[in-house]
Image 1 (cartoon, one colour):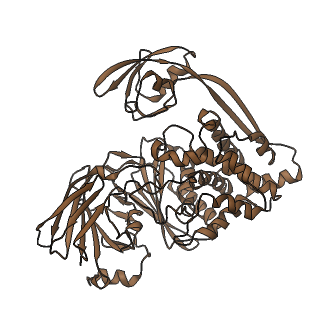
Image 2 (image 1 turned 180 degrees about the vertical axis):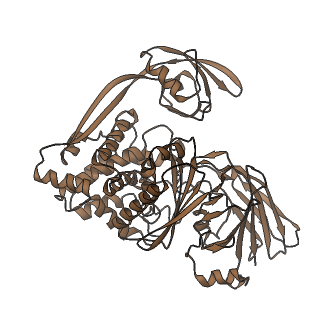
Image 3 (image 1 turned 135 degrees about the vertical axis):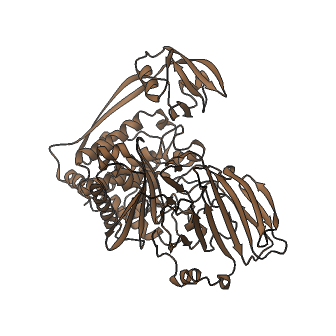
Length: 588
């Protein structure tokens, strides 16, 4: 267990000593209980003491900060019940899919209890399995309307008495948060298999694992130390007393995902890929840790503090996520984890993805940031991660070009951090361009109008040429029936482009593809193998399962551009271009 120093010590002493918190008014005590056996339910209780009102409204968030799509977690809540201190049932009424009202009558203290039906998977992997439990804040804890700023305590009851790790202060399985916001922003791992602590700038960084794999932990820990050292040096600030990396290791799981928090991050990783090379985890770690500044401190005004009952729509997720992706690449380059060739190969891959997506001519970065609430991360359209990554890269080049490498995107980040990281002082969408122009003395209106707000093709040859980077881009026409994405081994359609060949044929989200061109389908790779060997214009006999019935469709193969990109630094550099490329690659 860890002790995080984030609230006044005197409050902790009062609570641990059993002295009532009543001097401060109403107190809120959360608890979570797990079943003896593996179960998909969390049992939650919220005890309110010294109640000051006759009615309270409890709400489940409709989204999770850091994950920008509407989820409506109230749909997972069961068995809501209220009792007073004498176990007398209190009236609880469901007001909406996410809101419950409790009426107290004469009670001064009461407990609201409910069960949370936990899905088998979220984007971080399995929430409950034989290795342990992940408790996500916003999907687990109700908040009391108009009391989000009240301090709370939280405890956990696990029949197996497994190790608990959470970035909150406390001990003996009792932890404290200075508000609901901090509670919701502090994920919990129950069932830690191993942990270690490193110190960077004399500040402890705790590294804990749920799940096991036989990988080189010494190299893994050094990699984290290098990333932390580089990114704290960039921002010239360590805005925390302690930090926690929570890793969920899945033996056969390919890929990874993560979610940032103010004092921690939770990241799922493939044990197979870690055993191949621990550097396979470097990019996502650098990305999530960079969010410590760019999102959690340097943040949009709509996120400070977050409203859990509505969408936080903004046009600048490309900055919060895409530019963070660019800087995760730079971090790996600057630490030596990546070579220059690795860095350029990553940029080239992002160019391939963007130029293969015809939606780039219809959807701007601002639109993509705005539309994610409907489309989801894997929905139709361009990705603000992908294009934001590239806009961050070419913006860095342009800033260096117009200032003769006297100013870089590093300086823009630091200036925005200085201007907007004070509590409650978030930036607006327009502030990004304003800071760039203030720092460079140059009009960037055309750049933002074309590549951020507009859909003009990014002229990679010209812009990368300012840094003497040669872009060799080749396009070939290949067969396609997408774009669409499947989820899981049953090839269930997770997202589908409305005008794609499969959509035109009549397939829908949640359909399970059984056969394609009379061949059994068990994985997305099977679909890709069949399509790549087809001819544009062919008709593929397709059998799907929908609502328990098998249906037959005819899918016509269309064509799409397949892009291959290679980036190289030219051998002969002019002085100005050399300053730019050296500044990019070496952080000058």
